[in-house]
Amino acid sequence: MSSEIDDRLQHARAQAQQLHEKIEAAHHKSVEQMRADLSAASTKAHELSTSVRAMAEADRTGLKNKLHEAADSLKHAAETARTAADEKRGETKVHAQAALGKAREAVQKLSETIAAKRREAKAEKV
Image 1 (cartoon, rainbow, N blue to C red):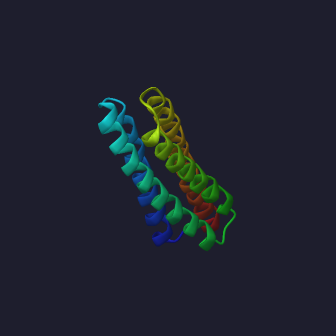
Image 2 (image 1 turned 90 degrees about the vertical axis):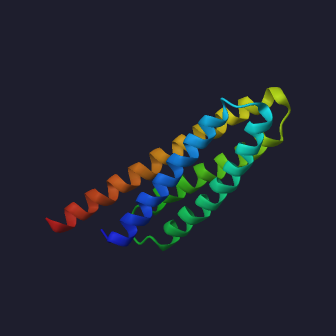
């Protein structure tokens, strides 16, 4: 496995984990603060989705689909966080919880992709 690809995947996963933490932390704030944090999280998730999608397009292995799935989860997290930031008081937390789930899903998919790439690299060495 290319060290550059591994580094980019590790960085994307770390950013997705930070996104998850930011959305989770927003739950413990006032609605106004939560909305501001969710708006920022939405922007970050969208940027990360674009980056992961670019990695998927450049990928020449069988893991392209996993990267697309992670990018889709991040895109949905961005959309849901944006919706949560724009919702009425009662709906904000519901949508924030959905965004949290999508961010968690993206972290999982990126972790699975890293593990699969490592298995591929081991198989190539054998």
